Length: 466
Ligand SMILES: [Zn+2]
Image (cartoon, rainbow, N blue to C red; front, side):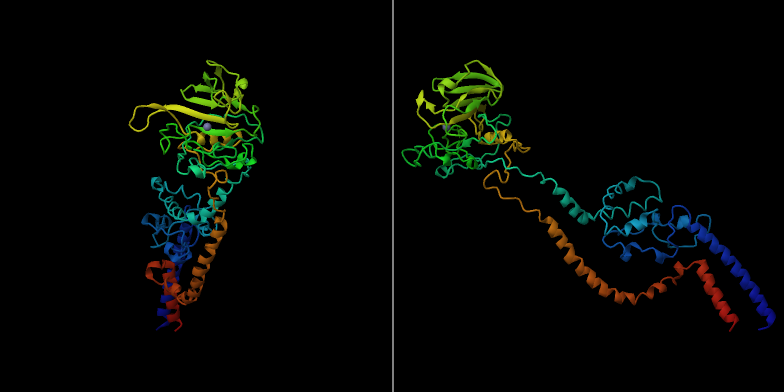
């Protein structure tokens, strides 16, 4: 080849080199345009959603609308065909730490409104965000600790326990009405209770000093036996064996109300109070006082000491007013144990029959009032039933220990190592294919004019000096 020919080719080469340099400058400036991260133009610099960098976190593929080539080529030719998902400012660095840092997932809820957002460049942002939503797994641990604070209020033992409603003394097993409904949610306890003073709801016939039933079952002893005065053994005795007609009792008959011993066995000492606002409509020589509430509910108090009763028929009373004192009078004489028999009647409809006045279950209402008297909540759920609360209610199992914390860390431990280790050994294998990555750029689709020019010039130079 003559020297002239070679000089001619050199001129062409230099001219081509000049234009390629100009083209490269334009492309670099476009890549730095606002709204596009300066992560580089090479597709290899930004992991594709399916390449594993977002494992378990980011999976949404790049939607066509999210390709940033339009921005990159603004003001210049669309030199790059497949760029990558456009990453909003700050988006990419935020994604990587996500798997480790939980706080990020919280903002996720926002992304959901993504469909409404018109901005094309903004759209990409929502996509990556919804993915974190699956992260609830890491969020759960956060929630559990959050649950801990709830049980935190230290449990202050009120000093009493009670059997479930309808769980009568074994001698009357099956007679009780297992009804958790709190029929009288607003009443207070019928005894005035000072601090550290407890009532003792239990059976009079089956207790010590009682006579049993039908000449059988007497426990013997005396009614002041300390075992009759154990606040940790409060017990229902509504429907206990009796001959009274009781439509709401399983046997159709039984005890009409609840028997309550005073804080101590001492006669004519402990005051009985009005459980609601109302009016006294009965006082008998049988030492019975009856209070009628505003809703027509009637509350009977039996066995008070005759000389202690300080209310008269027609008298209005307020909730908490003292009516008299607990004694053992019945039929005008001391004929029963020292206790208050308390019962309640309401006019209700049972089944399809016409409404009628019956003695209603009141044990749960007494428990609720007792709790209230001791500074606790009444323990009534949203359905109006007495909650089954450990350890106050006997037989309610203790809630599971707050083990969730240790358990959760345990889960991640086994799962993490297992997948991670196999993955790592696998890595070496893929590392070989690493050379394949350099192979990727060659695909013409990803080559820029600049790269193409460089390759061309190199081949020309090789030829020139060959
Ligand atoms: Zn009674």
